[in-house]
Image 1 (cartoon, chains in turn orange, brown):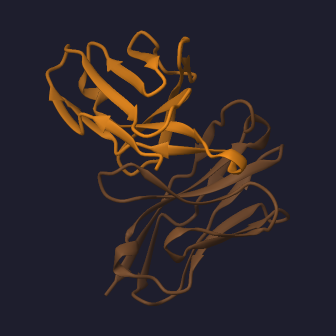
Image 2 (cartoon, helix red, strand yellow; image 1 turned 90 degrees about the vertical axis):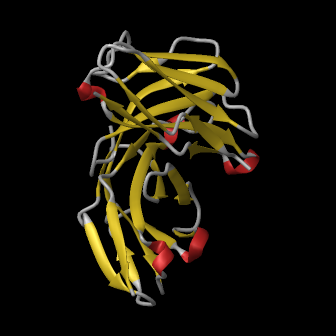
Length: 118
Length: 118
């Protein structure tokens, strides 16, 4: 259980275009999802926290108009990179909070989306 | 705020030998601790977590970690590694106060690449 999927797994786009990445919790409902960015040979950097039915909470330094997040349902959050530029090329990973009763909550991660902006 | 330090960026080890991946953290409040594994071009998979109770935590794939509050460490160990353990391992910490009822924001270390040599 607790599977998180991402689509697409890889995308190449031209500079100036927008790209949408989907994050789905397949077998559980997630009121909270997280979006991370991972640069080569570096750790994960939290970009924003996505809450179902409300606005996302962005980390300091992350442009909310650049990275649009929509958490429309309890199983789907989307990240749209608007007017993408080469410096936006990165590996984007989402995670979803799963409550497992007495064991509390755990973040389960999607497989990631590699974005390359030409 | 919390921070996580993984001093070893790479750890080569021969197959069937024991391994220890080091993790130290800093925090002004009580924390929860996690180890995740990331295989190439994939998301993160939870290996184990420490929330409370016994300081020795056993996880999947034969890994275990010990929480040492006085040394602010949470080192990951495995008595005998396999080729399939070759991956990158991330130590992470979250503020325990934000765990129940809300959501946890997790801070990741920079990762340690474990290379198992045949």
